[in-house]
Image 1 (cartoon, rainbow, N blue to C red):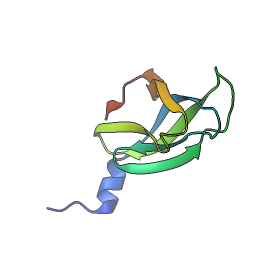
Image 2 (image 1 turned 180 degrees about the vertical axis):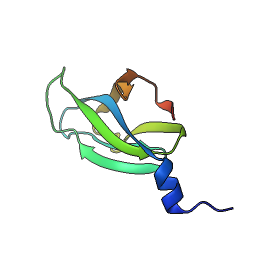
Image 3 (image 1 turned 60 degrees about the horizontal axis):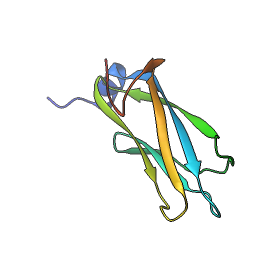
Image 4 (image 1 turned 120 degrees about the horizontal axis):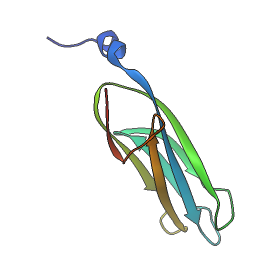
Length: 101
């Protein structure tokens, strides 16, 4: 039996994923992409300056129960660096690979 979109939608729940994104660069701000599973959610230039500046990405997604992944991809590697820390799923510390129910 093939499940329909509406059946799949009914078992999805809202989840909030947070991750701190840090960047450093000299001339051109680095760009990064945020993925959950294989879905591209956003692409941004890190325009906020300063050595100790980070932004907290707050990502609201609807996911089916199961294992999922968060991936931050540095797009323009020649322009500085991107690093991420402090993954949080629904207010609880998590990892880049996580389970939902």
